[in-house]
Length: 351
Image (cartoon, rainbow, N blue to C red; front, top):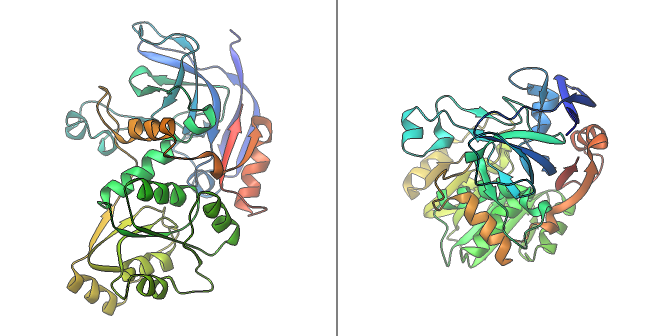
């Protein structure tokens, strides 16, 4: 196998270059994965253009699936050609959270695509314990979206979504539409989706949702109260990361309602005293959510649930894909996403 590979390498904030780099080594207990597709996460845009990564140079990309290309010593349960999805968080295994299997709360974690090299490349190395087999019938395109699908599922579980709930989704980007699909799977009786972009609402419509509202034209809180006979939503998912939608989500839930903060915040949020008072009187629950559950021992977790839902057809992710671009065009695509030069939902990069 060639010792070089092609990759999009971030050398500094706003400075990414496509070219040949050394192929990752494969230490004992690790696996080399040939990347089939890698999704562009909403967090990748500020990471590449504003915040930077934890070191330079870095290969970004953490939403991916592919095939096993090489195995390190002591890996005997995966073979070359096996189809896999990869949990990108590398936990320390020593802290209190890791002892309880709460890997996303690890005190000393590493992360593919931000703290170490990820999957905007032909190959990426990962620990064997981070691999999951892709079920038959699930395409590589779908499997590459396991990470955001698991994150969206975790948010709905954090909010305790259940049958009969009225669910309000603020933000119709990929993660918001995945959250809406999970609400549907969990039996929510009404799912109301809000966004200011008509193109995103059109994608929501293609996913089978009907209660779609342009927030620039109608106040979401008014709509929710109207639809729920003045009571409010049982659960509100803030998936846009916008101060205004955070305030609206808090105002939109009923007594004992639940608000889940899912979107990456784009700015500070100021809460009016009257809204805080209402939230207190209504005894609403505000839940933070980050990442997803993962079991290294094969137990039930958000990742396996997401893959099973894809395999059964309950979770439909292909309608979210608006672009599939080759790796050598990824940099121009990332710049277009940042500049809003087109309609972008889920973008997949294909090395």
